[in-house]
Length: 85
Image (tube, rainbow, N blue to C red; front, side, top):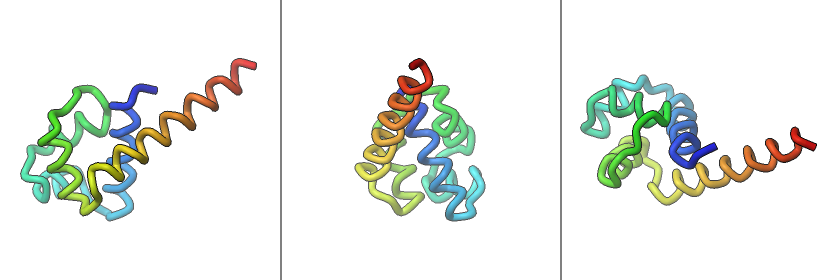
């Protein structure tokens, strides 16, 4: 799994835990809802300023979101290796 995909999954999980729609998060982050959608799906890399806006909208530091994404990426990588054995 690419980091951009893992980051998207982390953002989506955080948004859903807060019971926010993509539109609500976009409003909080001062972004268009399609930007949130692309980030969550990992279909388009985002600029650092956009990622910072997302983290602000979620009330979670960007470093924490990235760390969670890296942890997810490592976990997924280990699971893939285990399935190949």
